Length: 388
Image 1 (cartoon, rainbow, N blue to C red):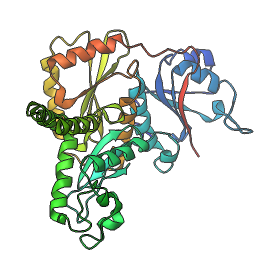
Image 2: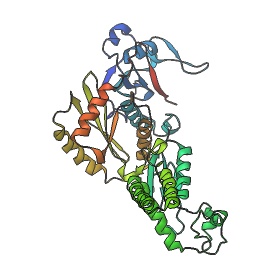
Image 3: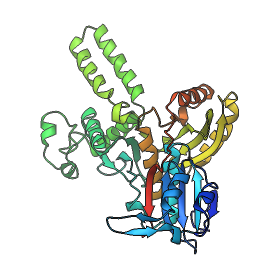
Image 4: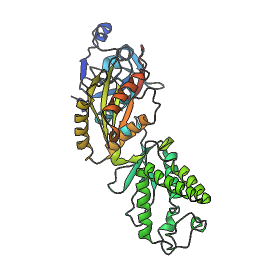
């Protein structure tokens, strides 16, 4: 069987001489990721469609236009169809990515159209630490914070951290520390001055480390600054209180808007509830750094949520120990896309550190309130990947 055989759990043989209408009765008119294969079981085309039966009727019914002038007769070429049912956009994207990688390992990356997730990376232990935006979270050193909504927001987060903690903005000058002259930011009192030796590089590294700690849990630091503001106001130091208030307003941007899902990469862990194959049925996915596991289905409201928590947390402990590689980064990109998508149809995501019986039951109820994905009487092509 094809390299993607472990991904597809159904298949059917196709004979070009058989009656097409009779053949179509053997396949579901449902949302699937499916694969055309030829007589030698070689991949021909990978698709995600809302209606498998309608898709096969169109594509196996005659010549199919696949370019401005090129036509292909799938009826003469295809001899086997593999498929896997999916019931949500999230599940469809996850399955399609895994299938594309397995079936077209040399070409899939430039053709599937999935966007990478953006992160801000910092390693306080380097000689000259700094925050940088990146789409490659595979290095073993430092901390990656994300996902961030897009590259512009990622750069905005870098600038925000520099402004909040008066960090060096000019890396070329930072690398000359402590023998460089004061940069323009230092002259405006908006940089602590490692460049000219105002503070030592060791002290600067400690400041960068502290800033990363704040980014990991901004609410704790905001509460600390709020207490400082209230104390200053109580002591009638109103100008100081006003400055702290302005600083708190800057800090409060963290954790909101394009930064609402930012957390250290090792805490990129969620349980997601997605629509199941029929009303009242939910599929449960465990998401860990670089991993997505379909665990089980939940019928009706999870009355015995504690029985679900045990296998979830057990597998999560195993998954959390894995390191993120290039394949894992692709999976993170798919998850990030759905985290930032409108909540009306994209399922429910619970951060693993917030998972408990009540949050799981609430997630199920919230899922049932979401609009069900539209079914299609036609083919409903979502994604398509042609063999070269």
